[in-house]
Image 1 (tube, rainbow, N blue to C red):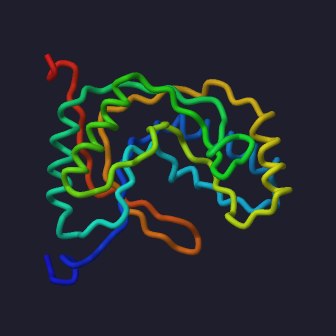
Image 2 (cartoon, rainbow, N blue to C red; image 1 turned 135 degrees about the vertical axis):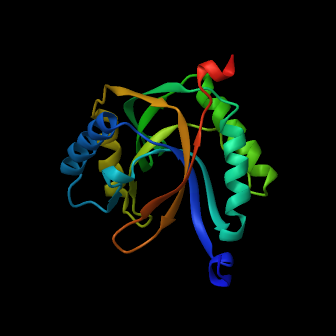
Length: 204
């Protein structure tokens, strides 16, 4: 690897991918909300960028990528494949004061164990632990930081009145390390590494 590549710093995160069917269903919800909130200062997530974040790493040195991949592969191999459901609509920090609009994820205990295992593995590499409890979700949009009160009220009204039912389930048999490159047209995600979860047979 050339010296420039070894010293490169990139933004990265660990995530589980969605199935095409669930991605399409979530995209349809996003389109409906974009119509209802047209003209308001929100940044919408492109359908191809939708994923379930397991750990946001932030800045990662390219020279540490190999060790990070080894740690992620070792942790993933300790967890068996599972499914999570997708549905409902909500917002952070609350639907009364929305800043992030999301579709909910209902996962088994296996999802929480996987998240905690990845947190522990990444902490051993020096990446800070997330201080807030893990609440799995799929981000649809972010409200502009300087949005006036009337915009917040309108977004809150839509989030509280729109009904989003069950959109489908996702089978998770691997986790992925992604690079995030920011641009004026929005982020571009590039998959760098895939860590398979153990099969049920391998766990026996």
